[in-house]
Length: 192
Image 1 (cartoon, rainbow, N blue to C red):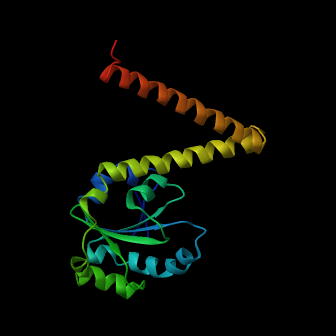
Image 2: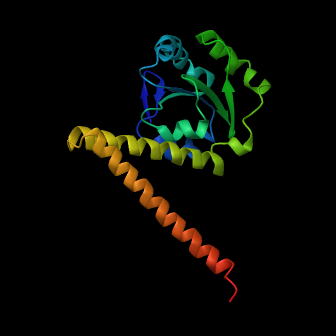
């Protein structure tokens, strides 16, 4: 984490990989955003003014670029940008109120977050379901990076990338099918 003018900005994979330490044991307001999002660009002046109050309110204020941290967007099931969560004592609540500095301050100082139902434990940050979603989001970003590298840096035409991807998909399904058949034969052997 790096502090810029009292504004907590998670850098690199720190927030994603050590979320237990950062998010589960302190109070946080976390904004998930994408730099290209117009709603994010409109919200930033208010969010930065609110961040100046973080120390006074004894709350950590962060923002996470979901284009850099796709696993975190999978864990939080972020479907709209920007999305804001309040995290305290391992409970996560989605902030859905108006997005002004004074509304954010009242939400924390007036403990308005207590009136919001926490995210169900099955959708909690450390649950198996959310960890799986995070892995899928990271896999999709890895595939996207591979596509960009092969088409832009290695000079492979786009149709060549799709051919490689198709062959890799077929090969992985073939291997998975063989494993399933092997396991089925071991568990329920055919009668002679």
